[in-house]
Length: 436
Ligand code: SDX
Image (cartoon, rainbow, N blue to C red; front, side, top):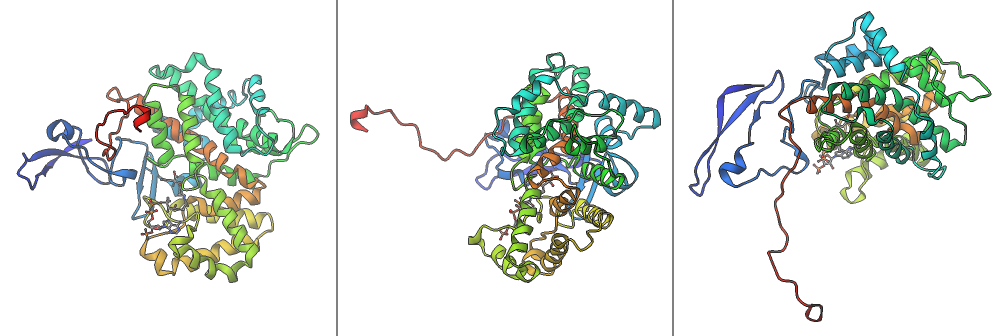
């Protein structure tokens, strides 16, 4: 970052001393006012619940322009990556800052492929769960449990440890998600196969059984690979900020990523894809397109607590570019599967059209986000609804670890420790119980 000529001057109406605050510019996007010295100079904190106006760090990984609906990974537009690259190339880009050439791609792919198996002991963690456990409950446990197996790579101050932990996490997430799925349907786990692609291997571990091979459809393989690319990273969202804050204590990367998994589960965040599909199912069951008006009315009624899941975003005040690409992927997969008339997809497009013409959504700049269509394409691929967020976590792992490594790799990083505006009781003395 570089200092800008302009400074910010904070003045106080009670005649307090003015405070000069430096302003810094990044490559793109809003400048920042550096308030690090504010408390020392004024004895006051800033106040920004939900971090609506706060930059928590500087980063070179992902840039979002919410007004333009633009998303860049290391400068490359998501539209170009989703059509010209595959997920492992995108992982290389996010981790190392550059797209790989053919030799680098082959080496990186081999590295990831050779780390897809998990320790045989991992399977015993699943036995403690009920068979109907939510896959995200299982994933939160399994990812944290990985830290018990890799004592050789949990020193995050060692760049080599950080790199091998990144490779292990990217490589093993598909295996763990497939194990979580197999456990809930009572089928045996399938081992990864090294002759399959990253997405193909995941489909194999999900849908093959010891009795029957699963023939990977290139269309589904490509669609899933694109879904992974679209979910790979997204600046300082809630789960990425959780990973950074967790990692800032110096804990091992597996524990920090497990914290990200737990945060992503929420319906306001990664859990929205599951919630969006359930919402479409409910409208379908209630009568389909004819019931959209009634549903929208409910959404606008604040007391209903009903939200249009898969809509709205803290940053995008325009169409989420990932939602557009996801809708295209929906069309490709549904037509490939002969499901062009999939009622849920038609319902989703009708719902989107009506919402985007409704003043309530237009005035609040609520557009479809990445979660609105992702459930429809995953359902078409045969992925069960409760697994959608686990697949989001699978794909986002590379973003989490790239952001964590960027933070830890900065010698200036400190443990994150926000303060508060205290509104509790003033100091008082404990009374003996007889007098309470
Ligand atoms: C993800 O941050 C990221 O980058 C996240 C993510 C990523 O890749 O990491 O992009 C992934 O989490 C996408 C978002 C998925 N969540 C959902 O689809 C759940 C539904 N969306 C909302 O919960 C909401 O839009 C949020 C949480 C996404 C954003 O909330 P904000 O920024 O805090 O906005 P807000 O709740 O203050 O909403 C502003 C207004 C409010 O109305 P008013 O108080 O002005 O009257 O818009 C309304 C909200 O009630 N509103 C909605 C709505 N989203 C916001 N009303 C109906 N349906 C919605 N979906």
